[in-house]
Amino acid sequence: MLFFFVLFFISNTIFSQGKFQFFGKDDVKQKVKFKNINNLIVMPLEINGKELSFILDTGVNKTILFNLNQNDSLGLNNIEKIKLRGLGKQEAVQALLSKSNHFRINNIVSSSQDLYVILRDSFNMSSKMGVTIHGIIGFDLLKDVILKIDYSNETLTFYNPKKYKLKKCRRCEEFPLEFYRSKPYINTVTQIDTITNKKIKTKLLVDSGGSDAIWLFEGTHNAIKTPKKYFKDILGEGLTGSIYGNRSRIAEFRLGKFVIPEPTVSFLDTTSTVNAREFKSRNGSIGGNILKRFKVWLDYPNRRMVLKKNGSLKKGFYYNMSGLVVVYSGKDLIKEEVEQTNINSYGVESKTTKPDVFSVITTYKYEFKPAYKVYEVIKDSPAFYVGLEKGDIIKKINGKPAYQFTLDEINGIFSYKPGRKVVLGIERDGIYYTYKLRLERRI
Image 1 (cartoon, rainbow, N blue to C red):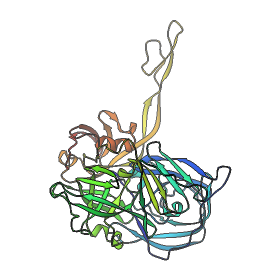
Image 2 (cartoon, one colour):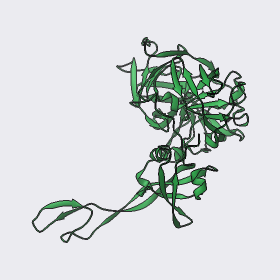
Image 3 (cartoon, one colour):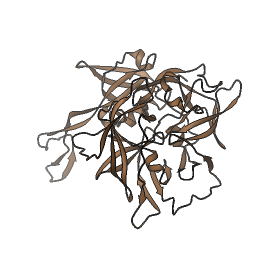
Image 4 (cartoon, rainbow, N blue to C red):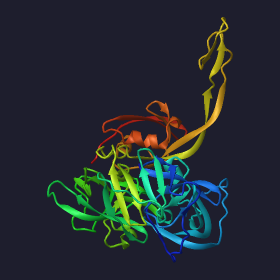
């Protein structure tokens, strides 16, 4: 299951922000490496001298911090209480607003940034992504730079808009950006089915904080409704609760001259998207599973976005076909055999983990390794029918210890190929079980 961030709404006044500025010898551009995890951009961000991991999310208009532990001491200034709300059915959550914070990305600095702090990580994003995620940043940074996102090489290039002009590109497509509450929207064309061949104009949020390909909101256009072939799924986690909807495919999606056949689409009802529908013209979102197929230039100062296709544009759209939502659940103490240096009767030294007649007694070491558990089992899925349950601890995957995989790799196994057999060794109430399931393409 690919989890993602969703937009947030601030229930009090929008405060003015300090600007990000370029310093040092290279005040034209700065390059930053990022990690692409579940189609999300995880980048380093230094706040008040502390380096943290943030998701770059074009779908948020404020910088939000939601995961600080006792080892991540961070001085916060000028604090007041506020409320935040977003997608999901739950009520707004309590948070803090801290002003005048110092932000830094390489030699790009701002000394007066607002920071919204959620003291309780209500959706526990770090466990769902398998790496530590401290927060999300979007408009506050992007309004002051021109950004190139190179998904293939996992590189962000920030350009100084005062000294850099985006060059024309014959193989690129340029889109004007329309902003509503500091979030960017573009116009696209969508074909829901192959029966009518009807193409409809859709206005979608550009949401780099969403791991899905496309979201569409039912009821925002006469032709936007779930196709006949779909299944109900947990589409992700928002600030105020889980996001549910219908997962399906559509016939075609167009971004200017770029035609994308049969992408996966998540259809959301009014209940799950009541806050997002405040912008009446909006029909949904474009997420990371579309954006990663391009080099993306985001030019907020000049209100435009430029796309250039990369080698993955025509690759298929996959999703979790197991029905399992797996999360990181801390660490287990694992006993492992130590590689030994053995000297045989000829005085020849060799390394082995299997002692021969000339070896000393085998020794072991104990190390903490990542552990994973089942967070949710989707009804009527392959995992549901074989009997896997919420809370099961995953010990082995296809014969290998689960700790040898990252969470991203586990999600990749579940999304790889219809019909593939997956064998899971799990622990439930102290008893070990083995389950076999086949990945099933349901749409």
